[in-house]
Image 1 (cartoon, rainbow, N blue to C red):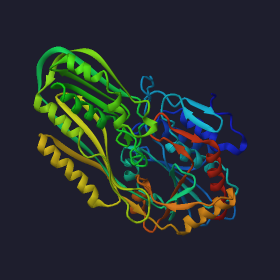
Image 2 (tube, one colour; image 1 turned 180 degrees about the vertical axis):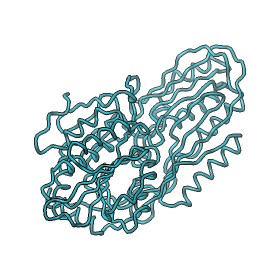
Image 3 (spheres, one colour; image 1 turned 90 degrees about the horizontal axis):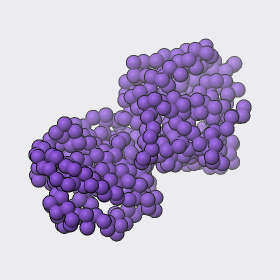
Image 4 (spheres, rainbow, N blue to C red; image 1 turned 120 degrees about the vertical axis):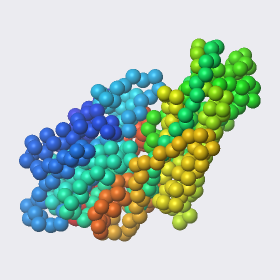
Length: 478
């Protein structure tokens, strides 16, 4: 393994990717990357605007002879999903990403890589830094907090944008042009719990080793959800002995499929519980269908318990863990991807409450309402409450729009390959920005990135370079 090699003249984006990878940029904490962008613009004499949400807009005049052409908007988000591998120490509030390279593949040591959307930020910086010998006026928008509900894009003042053509760089498959995406919403279900004195020898169940993934693009790949699996383990345990719940913790980001979960319980019959939990390999195998989840394991350790939840609360937790999860409906228009899904993303136990986080996705508002209505009804049954927030719109563009057609032509001229248009089961800022800018012709494109939102995230460097060269061709011809 080695760090990303010093870039050549032709790999200017690689240099910028390396620089921004060193900057901590968790969602909601983008001040550092915004400072970097402002300094970048100032050093090159480029017009720059930064708002209170840490969105940054940098403008560059058109090249000689093209100064008065219509502007082109290039857009990427600066934040990243900050997932850390099990038993790995990494503080994303202070540390950037530790890059490692093996041949053509770039990844990070024990964490997410941040190629989502660091590759897009790097491409915009290269375009602004004079990489293109010919280009129209450029308006480069770097948005914040995309990964937690497109919050930066929602807060930006689009009166500052004149462009009516846009390239969004936030896609993970080089051979696709994205012309449509899901809308979505986030939900919290909060269950108040009563703690009783319950001294005894309890058990801590730690489920780990799952692959996880992006809760939109990977939701139909059969990858197991650690919270759902823990619920099924506990349901099966009840057949051997009753137990009370002490705490439940798992998952982290709403847009990531949970990879681990920890439950602390007090069984009525400790011996029976240990006997069952000592041989759960067959159960785990039946609950994990994806080969990528082959590393799934359950660790059981003894703990001393002083307080427990009531029997009723313990039952309600299992009811919530058992709620419908994953793909609800698939598209029926010939496009092979989910239509509606929900991800049970995280659970936390603190201060007399257990909170559960969900992310619902669909291009249809009625389907999203179906999901939130179901959570509302569940909360009412168990004595909890819900909060729905950070909603964002879906988007359906035209696969043969001028921008789409031109990117196809540029990609063909650059690579000799064909590229096709499709829609994805994930949220993109394209939908929200299209709502703000009338008559916007927009597509989303990207390079090959795998296992987004997990510590296994990796990017193909030659794909990164091909997309960069396609962008240069596009800028010359647009």
